[in-house]
Amino acid sequence: MDQVYNETAKIRRERFGGLSPMRWTLIEADRLGYFIGVDFDDDRCVTRLFLCHPESIKMLSAWYFVILIDSTYKTNKYKQPLVQLIGVSPVKKNFNIGFAWVSDETKETYAWVLSQLKNVLGGRRPDAFVTDKEGGLGVSVREIFPSSAHLLCVWHMKKNIEAKMMSLGSSRESAEAFVAGHWQTLMNANTQRGFQQRWVDLQNSEWGRNLRFMNYLKGEWIPCAQRWAHCYTNRVFHIGNTSTNRVESAHSSLKKWLASSTHKIDTLFLRYHTSIEGKVTELRKDLEDSRLKVFSIFLQWC
Image (cartoon, rainbow, N blue to C red; front, side, top):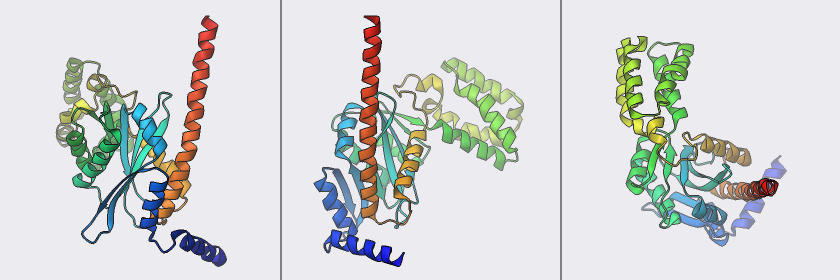
């Protein structure tokens, strides 16, 4: 193993040619045609890096309608968060829009990431963004893309409600039953009037006697119902995306390609690039299969 590590280190040194891993990554990304957004601190050290593969730019120009955003950890030696942006193709398959390697998850950082996305989009504006209820991200979405709808991930919402119930003394089984029953019924209301009535019914049920829990729902989730209740979100073109599960899947896929959480930025970039190349090939095949299926159905009718 020592010989393997030594040889690997030698190959990396030769590849860099005296450059730092970050400098080499920027040069290589530029050579490959990536869109690059980079931000520096006062010491000229990179604090934020946004990269978008050239094929991703093409796909985004055609399929920019719904964008899902979430961050993940354990992807690099620096222990810094990685924000992934995911789009949805006409055959309902994910495609990677890009990733941002950032130093923190503040409102300012998310605003910078979304500004880079805005540059890639040009004059296009997504119909909807789907994120979890991360305050800084939500505020930035509404500031940078005020004409786009901002939907909240219903999966994260349900998990947060279950966690709150258990912190107030409910069992896991009881919390899961509430979310799958009363809360799901409220969420699925087809009209605003139906939503209001179901909320009244919920407050008058046995759950309404738990004032601390009711106050939590009133303060945390009811005020933002327009971003998760079906009677509101069904007015938005979101292609069935009401959770960030696609981004979670992208996180998992990327981590499989990385196979370690201690890589430097150059290795992170190279393995991300390789994963994108494979995804593009897979997506092209899915699109071609879809075209052939539609053509076959057309011939049957003729």
